[in-house]
Each structure stands twice: as C-alpha cells, then as structure tokens.
Image (cartoon, rainbow over all chains, first blue to last red; front, side, top):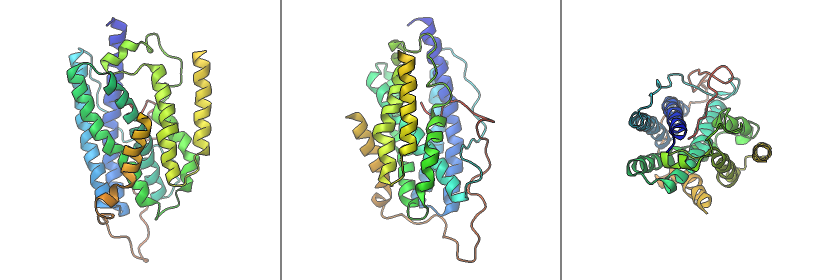
Length: 240
Length: 59
C-alpha cells in the first residue's frame, strides 16, 4: 500500500478515536437524562452500556493507530450537544438521542457492514465484528427510545431539525471535494471506505433505513428528503 | 438488500426492543406528580456548533 494511503488510513482512525470518545461522553449524559425523564430501565442501561462500549472502541482505534506507528490523538473531553438550547427538556433530550442513535449510529452501521464485507485482515475483521455487534444496540436504542417517547411527547417537532442532525453527523467534510487518494479502493483494506462510496452509502442509508424509520413514527421527513436531494446534487457536481 | 436487512435489524429491532424485554420494563424514575414542576434540564450543558465541534459523528 502506498504511503499516502497509509497516511489517510491513519488520519481516519484518529478521527474515529475522537468520534468514539465523544460518543462515550454523550451516551453517559443521555443515560442520565433518560433516567431523569423516567425512561424505562432498559433504555437507561443500554445508554450506560453504550458509553462503556465506546471507550473500548476508542481503545481499538488506538491499537490500530499504534500498529501503524501513527500518533494517537488525545481523547475528546468536551461533552457536545447539538440541539437548540431553547427546546424544552424532553424535546432537547429527544433531539440528542435521535441525532446520536437514530442517525449517527444507524449510519455508522452501514459503514461497518461495508467494511466487514471488504475486510481481509484477521485482526481488523475481529475488531469490526465486535464494533458492529455493539453498534447494533447503540442504533436500536434510539428507535426504542422513540417507541417510548411517542406516547409522552409530540414528535412532530423533530421534522424541521432532521436536516441539521444529518448534516452534523457527517461533519463539514463529507460533501466537500475529495483530497487526493481519498477514493483509492485500497483504503478498504485498511478499514476505510473511499470517500465517494461513503457519500453514496450515507445517502442510501438515509433513504432506505433512517427516513423509513422516522416514518414509522409518522414524523414528516419532507425536510430531510429535501436535504438528501440537495446533497445528491452536490455529489453529482463533484463527480461530473 | 443489505439496507432492507439493516432497517429490520436496527429500526424494527429497536421499536420492538421494549416489548421484547417485557413491556416497558419499569420506569427508572417515577413520573412526577401534578404538583411537581418538570425538570429544568435533563441534560448538562454542552457545546454546540459553530462554537465547537465540526467533525463527523459517524464512522
């Protein structure tokens, strides 16, 4: 594998280290928030377990970085929330659970499935399998929470916020032009999905998993569909 | 086909999770009575874009 691919792979695993440590902090806070809201013990414990899982996942990311002789970044120490502060307490909690589990964790599962299919290295495959097993529960947590919350809260407020959640999940980079080498298929061998495929997977998962999921709860997905259409146009422009 | 399976495992698996655990498996905190004001915040304060993180939250 050429050096530029190796550097890109290390960079992605370093970002994942931050994603995992940040998610650990958020899940711990969500667990406490759910407890305070009177959510079922099953949900509270699932969120607490997810927080511990993410610490273990970050350790795997660090191991992979170490094996590649790459620098391990410091863990994320900021507890980041993304919802507007002027929402009511129940709405704010719901916003953060939906953003973290229904969108981010659900989308991450699609990437993990792609990586698992491509993994040839035994250690990497073992790590990916462990992560995928955990992430299934992390994603389910959000959909299970909505099942509980729908009888206690009008979920229609979520509709207008779904595009912001989808955008926050990708960060600023995904729909920007790819850096040189970011579409190299060899990246898959190092546990990284080439950027063009990541964009496609993200939008397909929105269409086939996330949006139908929200529609199960009769949440208007028009704004999110519009966001996805806009991004498809961006992608078409990038690839033309 | 894989995405259809993901929908079944994640979304439908999640929505049926509480039932599979035996109903809502108990509230972690009794709902407040009529005289109890709702909590002011269920979450601690955290940073928000654009003041903070702008990286991804996904793999």
